[in-house]
Length: 311
Ligand SMILES: *[C@@H]1O[C@H](CO)[C@@H](O)[C@H](O)[C@H]1NC(C)=O
Ligand SMILES: *[C@@H]1O[C@H](CO)[C@@H](O)[C@H](O)[C@H]1NC(C)=O
Ligand SMILES: *[C@@H]1O[C@H](CO)[C@@H](O)[C@H](O)[C@H]1NC(C)=O
Image (tube, rainbow, N blue to C red; front, side, top):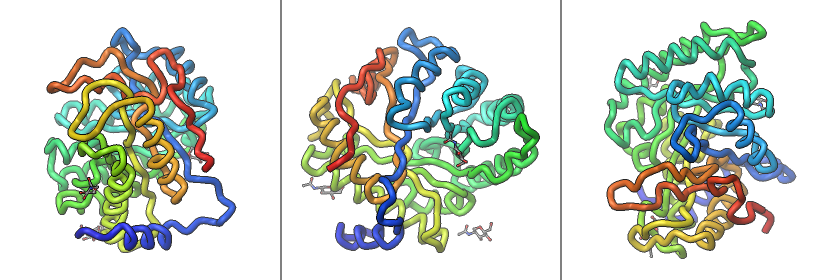
């Protein structure tokens, strides 16, 4: 269903009512787990990342707990820096999913429950067709049960840590995602106006339209407006090839930040941007050269533009 922007706006306003004086919704950063040479990050490198991000957020999201032994190295660094983690569990192939669960069992007992804000099974797994919605839903339920049986360093069960999934907005509004949405405590929607080839002028409209469609679907399936819903990935590249009418540049990224990211948070929707740092180790993919340039910071941790959201 295609709703007008006005209709979507009124839905969002009624559904995300917050006390008037409340600050805008939190910001989080997707964080790569490799350094510029392509090597897995060390605990010291995560600590340096957190030091850079600290003025803007205390929350990062990763895609897998076992890739690069991420959980082993990021968790102690996050605890020391006072950061919160949203952890990804990669669900395919099955051996990988098994390793991800073993990694949770091995390292969650070494840290504090309060460091883990949520666990997301799959990242655009339905978008890629890696598994069916029914299988993903069963994994989400399984990970919830698994967490309930893992105890943190103070003996507290991980039961109750929200478990859900993250996928592209257009997949969330399709029937394939209904079972996983139903099984989830928390849902993250990704939306990239850049990859929709939007003009700079229309990119904010398109972002809001996408996210509001996803939010409305989740609320309808849950039969509730009291849901834990986040933007999981959005952003704008600062260098690399054009895509349709979309043009990478620092100026366009800054405009998308102000008009898209800040405005979405202003509406009360927690937003994770893609991504914290440029990843210069990344190769060109299928004729596009933007992949290394999605960072809010350069690969040597310099801020590319102001993140100030005051209007
Ligand atoms: C992390 O999230 C948990 C649960 O939402 C919260 O209780 C805790 O205060 C957060 N910790 C930090 C460091 O933000
Ligand atoms: C949602 O989950 C509940 C409880 O697990 C189940 O009874 C219900 O059939 C599910 N609904 C859909 C649409 O999958
Ligand atoms: C703007 O974005 C919307 C939503 O994605 C799309 O339907 C519309 O065609 C776009 N308009 C222009 C002028 O590009």
